Length: 95
Length: 95
Image (cartoon, rainbow over all chains, first blue to last red; front, side, top):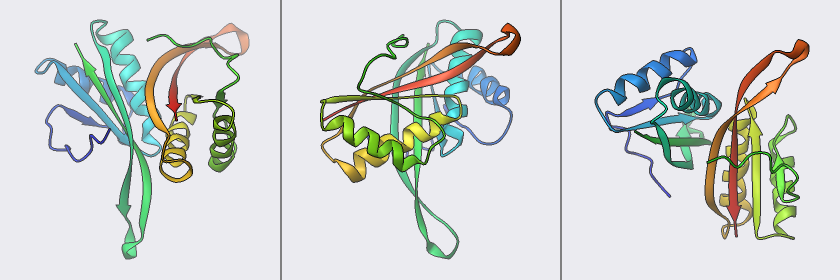
């Protein structure tokens, strides 16, 4: 199920702390160029990633479907070298 | 992809505001009785649902796998009858 480390994909939208609709628009723009877009998030942003996918699918483009969802655990190195586990999600959308 | 409204399944663990490990234990207990457990969450609890699934899978029982993940939008009626859309997730785990 490991799908991580492909972070150089240009069709990936990373969810951060901006307003949800910013990411909805980013996904819509990617779909103007590609048939598949990956929404990726870590930690608390995972909830927002699901919001973005659901808004794109239900309001922006009803042809968009969820192809696959992969969850995994990433090890993040913090200050002082302490490693912490953070859950992540990748939502693969296709049109 | 609609899998909602099956909330009477006894093998479903709903993620709320308790500590993550409480839900990890709830899932572990369900797995002592069933081969499939569904972790369900809405809104901000979605991130915790992914944490619970990842902790069960990586630390509690390495035989547990993610069978499917379904995201959807639920309409919740608030005070005064105002309806709001809330994202939800169902993570289907099997051993």
